Amino acid sequence: MKAKLPWIFLALGTLLLVGGSYMGLFVAPAERYMGDVQRIMYVHVPTAWNWMLAVLFAFGCAIAFLFTNNLKWDSRMEAGIEVGVLLGFLLCCQGAIWAKPTWGVWWDWDPRLTSVAVLLVASLGILALRGFVDEPPRRAVWSAVATIIASVDLPIVYFSVKWWNSLHQPQSTPETVASAFHVPLRVNAFGVLFLMIGFIMLRTRVAALRLKREVDVPQMHQEAGELA
Amino acid sequence: MLAALRKELLLQWRSRGQMMAVFVFGATSLLLFSFGIGPDASALRTYSAGFLWLGLLLSSTLTLAESFHAEMENRALEGLLLLPSDARALYYGKAIANWLQLALLGIALVPVMVILYDAGTTKVLQLIGIILLGTAGLSAPGTLYAGMTAQIKAKQMLLPLLLFPLIVPALLASVKATSLVILGDPMGQSKAWITLLAAFDLIYWSLCGLLFGRVVEE
Image 1 (tube, rainbow over the protein chains, first blue to last red):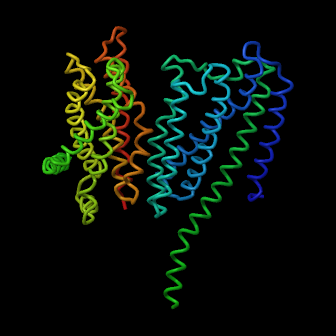
Image 2 (cartoon, rainbow over the protein chains, first blue to last red; image 1 turned 180 degrees about the vertical axis):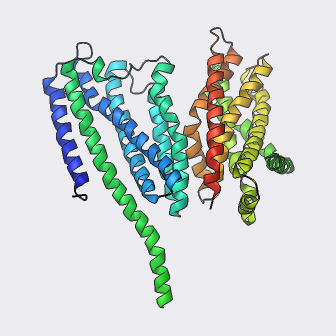
Image 3 (cartoon, rainbow over the protein chains, first blue to last red; image 1 turned 90 degrees about the horizontal axis):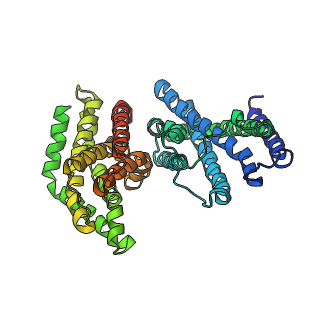
């Protein structure tokens, strides 16, 4: 059952995402001012919410690791960061696709856009750091520290719309959107959420297995040496 | 902590030549930036603050990466950690030394900027204040990451990779505040940017000191 759980999440997420996107594309009415372009919001906004959740998850894992020193949190953090990078990248792409016809530019130096990009680059930096440190405990501590430091960026990301008044519209929530629009939005939000949970679970398993191999292999060499 | 600070300052004083080299590097990068946008005097003046801070940022990766050089020789870091003092004292000593070094470098680069970009100002004290705040923002996370990356192979590459995205808010605020000093501040915006910079410094000086102990532990 436990081995199948991520796949159940992935299947559920895919189903919801397909259903929600169908509703968003064919059932929901076109938005009055932006027309069909606005329909990308049905994936863009859920991606944004879940990206924040993934980053928050990695942050939580980093803190949990520093307090417990249990490497299982390290594997979870690695998964969280990597899925976060994927979602952040998707977020930037979707945003650019939406911004070109709406704002007339692919990219804008809006504080929130900029913060997402900054955190994305910071996450890639942490993944690169992980690639260069060989000893698992040290790698875990350092990337946890770097994750915590980078996560301090997250509140700046979220509140920057309020702090600096900017081009980016205030974030959409179901309360600010008419019901015909928010049903596909909610369905897709859960779709992306389940996909994210499934991916993080699978990726955690990969990280844990890799960690196990790293810890086991030197021991095996040692044992082989003793036998010879 | 004062002992750690004194040790750092002494080390820096004894390697003055290196400081000079970093200054030449910073001045060279300021010169190069102007080739990047062409000999348009008014554009150069408009962007002078940005160039100053970018030059300072590039130079800082050199000084920060060097700052743990002495500790890496003969496993001196382990020896320091065995002393009956906190790793935090070691961190703050080093961070303050790095800060002073960067601030000095920044102040030394100002005349270069004034000459190259015709970006003079009479508010010298305010400019120095901004440089002090901005370099403090560079030095706190920079020292922490230098402590990490000094211990691994690819340090030259990883330090900027980790540091640059992080200090974006500090860079932004420093550049804005500096250019408001140089170009005039009719809307009175500089106070908000300086507040942002001070908040950034406060957050990272406390957070990094807290985390440094875990970074250097065995």
